[in-house]
Length: 446
Image (cartoon, rainbow, N blue to C red; front, side, top):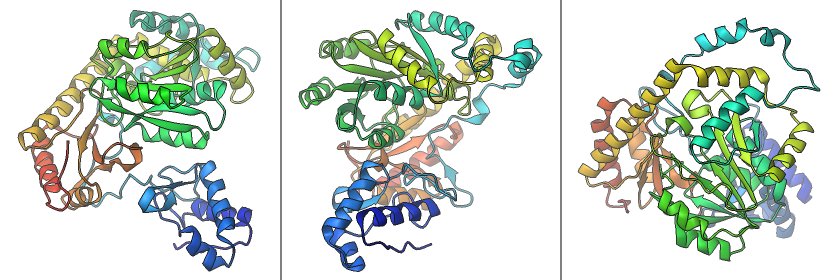
């Protein structure tokens, strides 16, 4: 479908573009006309179009992309009437392998059959809590307290949210207002960058290396007025970085009591590296651990550890909206945590992801291609430009994610998810990546 633009006022133009995104006439990543071009087409002043674009940008529907102009966000803050992939998710040709999604391997997830059967047999399944009594399940919080304390996370005050991003959003809105500046990893989680845009928070990029956010990067971000700091402890998306104990100690020295620190430990039980945390360094902090990666993306549950004031604000706002996370889901997570067979399967999955990830990084190194992936299910390949390599890989039967959706100021790259990759496919994939980035017009860079 082709988008047609209408309207005479800024509000009408913005509404028309929003309708086009919802209808699928404009899709994630699609460019919009320049301000002057659209003003000429609609016979209105450039200021009118600029105001419309400004409104859409504030609501995270569109974004400015430097020389690339203005475009629909990779994940616009609108629901569409027909399914649309995010801009960095390319269509997968028949027979091609899709390594762009960032999801765990369904074959490695634990079965829910046993835990669900045990849960169904419990009387609590049939009775359940009511509107006045529902909330965080005490048994789940007790189990989470033990797990978090073992990892050095203060666990005096715990809550439950509907996944990692829900917990992060609730924490940010409990402390920040539109326009506040937030230090965020660069490259970083695309969904988180889109959330910051939707909340009208200003991201300040902090470079990431294998050991986590860099000291110089965080120093510069704090000097730039950051009121909050967002950190991924392990399996950083997209680079696979892991915050080390030494780096965490150096970062803690930079944190002042008035900063909000939010940590995301989304890989949790899949991680084979010890946890290093910043939790408790400042007066306001939150540590979010979700269950989606180890146990299944459809289990929208995360445990939130925080200081007392932050947790009280999160709980208060939660009561005015969703109320609580389904007690059925909470009980299911508790059953999964208690099941030794599930624990063994999750541990085996972590080992398998490491084989795939390390195997791919090593195979690329043998072919002269730098790549990164210390933990998690993604490998990051720096390149000089993204479009050419991504296109050539797709033509060769491999679909990967271009790095544009994950970047603020950092250099171009490709994100390759090993969640669907088999070990015996690694040599062919490495050959294809090496050929794709070796083109003299695009090359690659460290």
